[in-house]
Image (cartoon, rainbow, N blue to C red; front, side):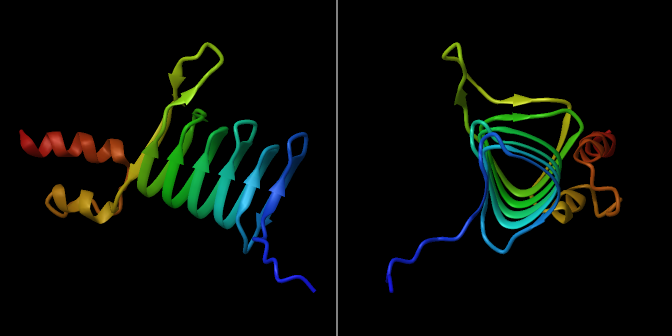
Length: 147
């Protein structure tokens, strides 16, 4: 019997493609491709990882390619975010990543970022429009209220 406790992970290795619903009670690490729904305590995408779909995690760290509808408590991005992506998170950290030409970059497509507590954004608007939680709407509405 071994006393060596290893941390369990759900791993999608490089060269593996998964499509469907993935629910895990342990952290998920993706070096391959996943398309679908992921629910887990945390999700880590390596440089080669590619995830597109509906993601619900407490912690997301992405160095790869990410897209879809993401709900997380904290997000750390250093890869690319594809078009038509919505990221909802209490905290967002963007880290520059070295690309092929030695440039440091993070690539965002046409996406929507909702960072922080949505109720605080509504408070800044005088308590109006609690049901519409789109960040762009808050920004436009804030400028309309200042006029």
